[in-house]
Structure formats: structure tokens, C-alpha cells
Length: 281
Ligand SMILES: *Cc1c(COP(=O)(O)O)cnc(C)c1O
Image (cartoon, rainbow, N blue to C red; front, side, top):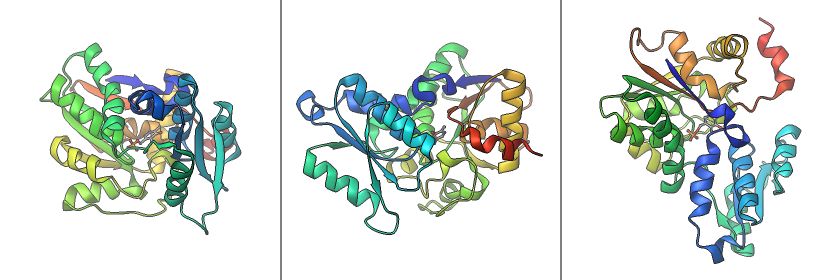
């Protein structure tokens, strides 16, 4: 088994890759005016860091209920945080209005070709190190990482089975993969906060249908068991969403004994105030 440790990536998750690839490609005179994103998670931190590296302003739209740790991390990378009230204006409308008023470029979280291409470099680097693999397990929220990984596999290891893994409570991608239509699951109740996205995007879904072999899920209990294993035994701090692929493998959701398997550990930004509750069992 080969682990791609994106928990050790800059800002702590693979999201740096897509944000960098997308922001670097904006023409300089447009980029100078700044970028905007809506997210309270790793995408916010990635956009904030990459904007700072380019010396341009970043505005991040977050819910007023976002955890203080995420808020501080995003501000720590120099971004301006603008709150939306979940009851009032929706965040997409607010981000679009800010983009228009201030001339900012909107950086979408997953459903954009430059984001997908950037995220795919995680799998690309893994294949460069390991050579061909029999299977690759990839966490899936909006499907940016999964679709990019599947494209990389297509080129680097055409016989590799690429398998997407979602939280059991937020299995919209599994349902969409099975039905052939974009299905939604709203407000998924799971500790995998990076994969609560209600649905795949039109672009990521099209790539996933074409290039992904299978989809599966992992329960919160399976995520905790996998997290405990990597923390204790491998000395790697990985967040709940980050162990989706490993959890599916350890729980026997996929049968790959004796195979050369790649697993993307997608991020390591853990909310430490939750740890006691998770590890109590
Ligand atoms: C965003 C995120 C995911 C899901 O990525 P998508 O491209 O939205 O599918 C998985 N793991 C971590 C750590 C994330 O931050």
C-alpha cells in the first residue's frame, strides 16, 4: 500500500494544488484585482495562501457560524473574511456580487477544469514514484480530487482501478454514479467535514462517470478507526475526510488483498477540540 500524504502539503491539504493552478493562470492584470471564494474549509485556506504568494487580495465568504480555528487560519494567511448569514443572502449570490463590485475572480472549489487539473497532480506524483498500481482510493466531496486523479491514472496507469470514497451519510456521488443522474444529499451528518458537499458538479460528474471504476463509502466509526491507526502507528496527523480511502480499505469495503494499492490521504487539518469525543470509544 502506498500513501500519498497530502496532510503534509502546504496549508495541510491537496487543495493548494487546484488553487495554485487556477490562480496562476489568471491574466496578471485581472489577478491584481484579487480573488474571492466561498468556503469555511481547506479551499478557503488554499485560496488565501496562494493569493498571498501572488501578492493579490483574497476575500473569503464564510458562514457566521464557521469554527474560530478555521476563521483564524484563513485570516492568518492574510485573507479578508466576509460573513454571510445562512438565513439571509445565499453565499453564491454574495460571492458573485463581491466579484462584480470589486472586480475579483471567483475561484470555484471543484467544478472547474483548472481546479481538476491541479488536484490531479497529487495522483500524478504518486504514480511517478510508485509506477503502475492496481487500484487507487481517493476521498470524494465535490469530486475535484477524484476526477483529477482519474485523469492522471488514465495517462500514467491505464489499468489502475480508481475508486472514489465518500462518507456514508453523504453518499450523493455513489447515488449519482449508480443512477447516472446528479443526485443530492443536503446537510450530511458526518465528521468528514471536507466531503459534506451536497453534490458533484456537472464537470466532475462527467469525468467520474467516464474514468472512475467504482464508488464506495466509509462510516464515521470506520473513519475514526482509520484515523487512530495512522495517528498511532504511522505518526501522521490526518483529518477525518483525509482517511476516507484508507478507512474503506481497512473496513473491507473494497477487496484488494495482495494488490498494489495507492491511497490518497487528502488532508491533515484537524479540529483538536473534537479529538476527545472521537477517540473516547
Ligand atoms: C475538499 C477535500 C476533499 C474533497 O475534495 P473534492 O475535490 O471536493 O472532492 C477531501 N479531503 C480533504 C481533506 C478536503 O479538504
